[in-house]
Image 1: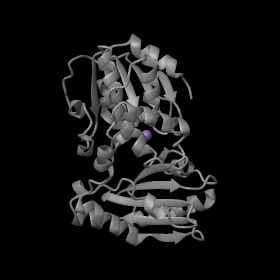
Image 2: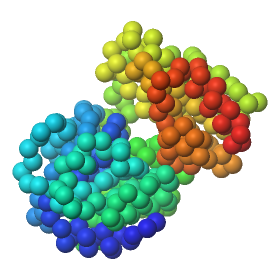
Image 3: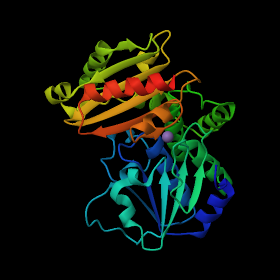
Image 4: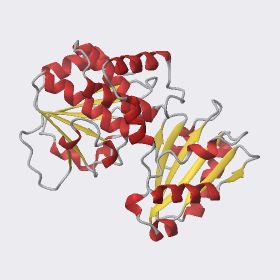
Length: 325
Ligand SMILES: [Mn+2]
């Protein structure tokens, strides 16, 4: 776990001029965690900016403060020189890309996360691998400040928890996670609206991509592994910008007898992205992803391989899963 919630609370109270960030390809946990902490810093009168080295996904535009998240731009001017970088849901410092270059020389890094694969890159590291989400860790920090929860903060935290627990299904969905969720609803989080925005807002291209992925599903290793893919030809024939494959890897995992699901995608020619999910305690997909330079959690991990064909990557991952089973 590294440093304690109390230590982070004290460090945040001490410092000023914060730069909040999350990983590239940001998800609801990263965005929600950033916004929740931003509301707390605002209440304390602390100067802060939110910057990510990616586009800000439009699907989170229902969150209050969304419009204040800035995409990184070369030579961008900030209202102050950041003295403290708070990394949220970031397993590895490289995943923030160029955002780190905005931190003033000698500035400190506070690393708040829940990934098993976290490299503890911060000066302060609060990595709670038992937490359902980074948002849950942020909830504990905000509780440490002693504020009442407001609706904006509650919805940001709820978004992170709902996404990272796979709608309250995964192992991280503990009693304490559910109690926190109860507090968020008490604070006014509009859970029905959030569910609509997160899960019932697909494009036609996304549904066609899902059909394509499901059509490729094949079983390996006596039915313990299912592999599906979305090749570069599909991406080239359709509007890439409208395809969101988040969560696709979970569908084949529902097949009876399957322990691991692998989804391979080649959105950019020559760049193969792998997503791994496990529903069996006997196999840790974080270990498998690490072989390919990635990581994540025991039951959900990913990796990116450059300059290799999708079929070649597939054969290698099947071998790695075979060895891990
Ligand atoms: Mn997360």
